[in-house]
Image (tube, rainbow over all chains, first blue to last red; front, side, top):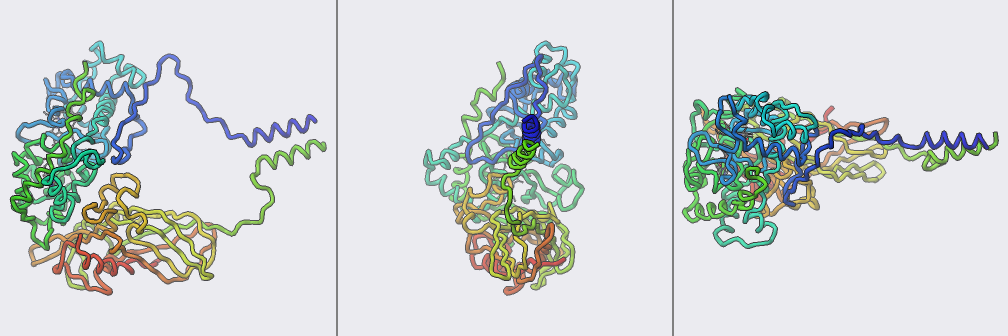
Length: 340
Length: 239
């Protein structure tokens, strides 16, 4: 009988899967609370880096940093917070002239950042660039502010403040900036109707007539890739775009496609803000596209005619459609505004 | 000691799901290895290196497509099929290996697959919601589903100037279907089918395609169908 028991025990040991090793219980620090991203049903799954899961504490810290001018204390951007230029009511861009501020909308899907693609990787990577190179954040100074060390502890387990943690917290907050409740979205979900002009504009946008969808596809209205859309035929200075980063002549004049979500709020347009209105943008695609060896092949719509040659009616319809991409719940969401 | 024997039997029984069973037919893990060429020249992005049968000198700036529904027919008539849809980006990943699961051993005489999304899955939203698939959507306004193929680049129109071309295929009416008659003796621990796409085959047989005729074909059923038909033999088994 003893043999039976022993053998059975052996059998049990042999057959039982090893228990899942549970992490050592951290008794002294309570771990941060997971944050579930609310995505509209038609949105792609968002890949999130394993070393930076979304947590309530991380998002709250990122939001506080985003709105805090002290982040730039002593650095080249002294006096600025991220939110000084990335303003919620402008879809986290602004209306200033010069290099267009890029909006922070659904950015967690991108893996190439800035107009010229200076940073490739994840949101964490571009945030590290912003924190370390652009703001040159003084971490020792932040550590002297009473509210920060406990917030870093709550988000990351200890009071240590470094560039990486600041970048990770900012990445968490910006990842939550999801816009997917525009009039167009509600139409897409079958909740509202579009006007006749908006419908006609939508058909131009999503057909070979306007061919906008190839680079501004559903549901994000950007492919997050780089294209030359014929703004110039000769490229100098900043207008060389992606080429300045890659030094590949095939990249001359290419820029990261911006999302068209909330585009009504993000004038002036294009990387250098050269167009003041959507009318000027549409006029460009219709009548002023310039040929060059790197012009995107998609722009050769009608057998080598690189211009769409839209009628005034078609232009007005296209603009009417673009205006349906404004998401007022996004720009008024109190969770995205300055923390109390 | 008798108990020990019983115990051991119990032990064996507990551990093994099904004790005595005839050996299953050999299942062979099957992979497909993809390569690219243009009439023997290697695939290189962005350079006007290639010439097609219509004498267009051209470059390739984008080659993205799907492969789906690999089907193999054995010499005894048995058909094996795999319904996954695989996204391909030739410039991003020029030599991928695709795992297609396990196939019963035997001599297979026909290999078929779609270069694109097979009809039942070619509906908006039918593929997993990823950014790659979103970027391949074929707008509902034009029939819905996905682009089967995006082949883009530039070609010389005059000695010193180029224009773009965009060979986009979509809708079930323009879905390229590859059919390769062969003799593959599939057995052993694993089996790999080496497939090479010769990009120039998109522009010949049965139709010699000239970019000057139509450089942008999306929505133009006639030209999309010509390219789709040309696509039947773009892939060949090539060790």
